[in-house]
Figure 1: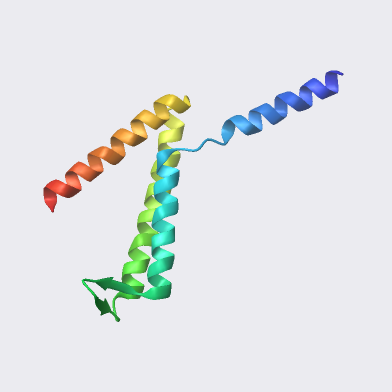
Figure 2 (figure 1 turned 135 degrees about the horizontal axis):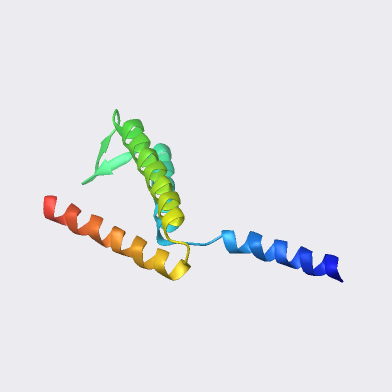
Length: 103
């Protein structure tokens, strides 16, 4: 019986470490976008960028790696999932606001 409770505690600890966050979704989206660009090429307003498709795809892979590292950093600072979601959604909102202001 004691072995079973120890096993359950270890399983609970393993489950607690796996948390889904907004930056996980952003990382996945960036990697999917990079794969799409590698396969079909980059097109803006209908005209393909034949020579730049690989470079644009690599840029999205780099963005995905950076966002993944940011997610790890945020996870180290915020242990509660609710706070992690709030901080990461705030970060994404801030980045979008800055993007639209610069654009």
